[in-house]
Image (cartoon, rainbow, N blue to C red):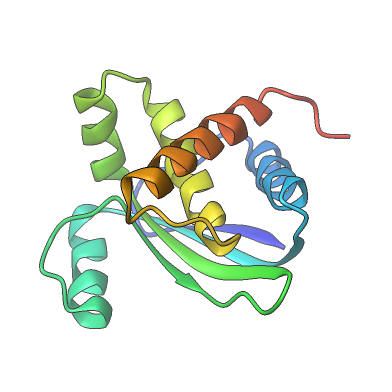
Length: 140
């Protein structure tokens, strides 16, 4: 089950479409859907999580806690809407595309993709692009 929670004024338009899309990402990687919670928040909220749980005193766009067991994808994905807006501006892409990139990024980590090396990061970007393109495909 894919759920969306809001710790800021931001809200997704057409949550059902996003749920179908995230479910499609999971299925396209040959995985089963468990409990995935997206929590949309602001910089300060995510900074406190970063400090408390990861001992990092830096701003970030996403923090994910992976509860995946075997082939069943589960976890909590915290996304700073402020960071996504800033990154969209910095990379000169529409906000909705950058948001989808970050949303897909968390799921792809749960599917086993990494982004520590240059090669891993290149594959992650390719997979993100592939998954963003799926958003416009009708889910059957």
